[in-house]
Length: 442
Ligand SMILES: Cc1cc2nc3c(=O)[nH]c(=O)nc-3n(C[C@H](O)[C@H](O)[C@H](O)COP(=O)(O)O)c2cc1C
Image 1 (cartoon, protein in one colour):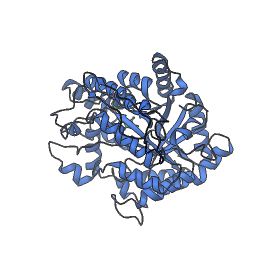
Image 2 (cartoon, rainbow, N blue to C red):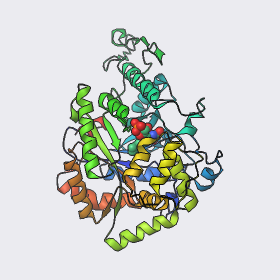
Image 3 (cartoon, rainbow, N blue to C red):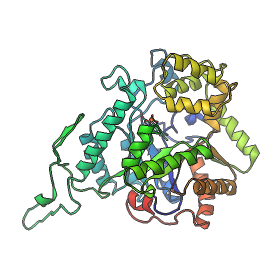
Image 4 (cartoon, rainbow, N blue to C red):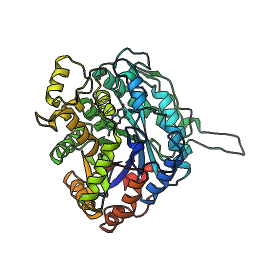
């Protein structure tokens, strides 16, 4: 999908209202609390000024339990509250002309017909600026809101996802781009030879079609995925325009990109059809003193109660009391022994990025403040981004997560780093077209 070697940027706005980020000194200053769109609308304007391709909202539609109850999660705001991000994305779209939006849609708990109809409709309202992050939902408390006692089996979720995407694409393709007539003289609305039933009948879904929507501006909204297991990579290789990936270090990122190339080729596509947006933190500073100050400012905002609950949620080990003083490797060994964790890829990453003596508390503070993150002066950040981008195949860009404060962090990035990247010819100066697909294709 990323046909040029330009660096693309998406802003990760998923957690800016939670995980203690809302209380970092200087964050959300002068804005109404989460739920009101004010801050997000200002952010949309800032991101568009900086020629970002989009804003991303992750989503987990559940309240994580800790020791069987929602109390601690609610009390410390661990990924709670979490509204449906779609209305926010639409409010932001109304305040901008080019910025795109990636919102998350579960292929485990939703139905592809609803999703296709919803995203086609939003693509119309936003003038072609919507993408969906198609996830297989590994978080246990989400399952319990959709009729399951526990998260369904990993492979079962991926099999459903495979059929889900097949159906969704058939539905998007069930109305040809030139199907609409809107002929005032004759009263004919559409050419029936250009709209078809899909008559899909599979193991998980039975859908007649056609999609009851006029063809949407992008034809198919941009499709993003983030699964990193073998099944996740295979699915991305087959269907995704972009993948989100966590680049734990350069070597792992290169290996990840190579696997993605293989997955695209195995699915009969070119690796250039499948971009990667590496999930990175960022903190633009004037020097090491400010970097240390910002790190401490973030650590000061994180209540210790919150940190361990958060890891329990991220790893999917509800109710397993994580001891901040215990080494990560020892903790993981017990989790494996007791077979507690459905999110093995995150747990394995924790082991790979720590030493046998790193404690859970050390891991969490590093994880929440340092890893992986571009921290430095504008020139240093531009240099590091450029190097990382080209070393990993220059096929996509970055999904940037503010390390400390919104909206100030993005403002600084747009004012100080973007012009350097533009002067180096690494970032676009103008949007290429009205749709998200137009801009991501450049
Ligand atoms: C950057 C990034 C963003 C993600 N966002 C979400 C999300 O919003 N909701 C969700 O349920 N999973 C999300 N995930 C999880 C993945 O979609 C996937 O379910 C998870 O990695 C487990 O799949 P795997 O076993 O194939 O790795 C995200 C993962 C990454 C790396």
